[in-house]
Length: 60
Image (cartoon, one colour):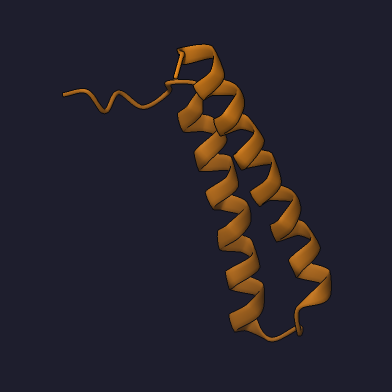
């Protein structure tokens, strides 16, 4: 997989996670557990998108 393809795939997965987490905040019950879960999905989406651009140096 080339670097460009990996970046686009990571950005796509990150965007899907962000949208899914945002939709989950409206669809899940308004209890703290479910809202924290939805927030964690959103944060995970941003982390995947951020990591797909090579912001983290994991080679060392």
